[in-house]
Image: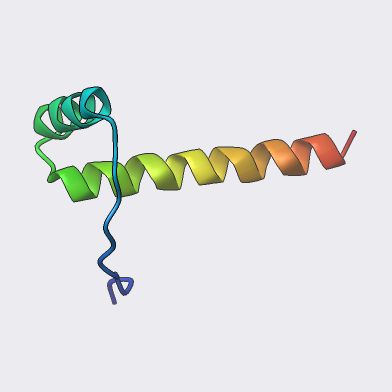
Length: 56
């Protein structure tokens, strides 16, 4: 079963949108899919860093 998704509206800098559109096109993804993937990876990385830092 696919995860539920919700629509939101965000404002981004024009240069960021251009970069994200290019990345999405290179990966043959929609802009929304690309942003979602980037955010997921970033949040996993933050979580991993926090867990590693707490272990010190």
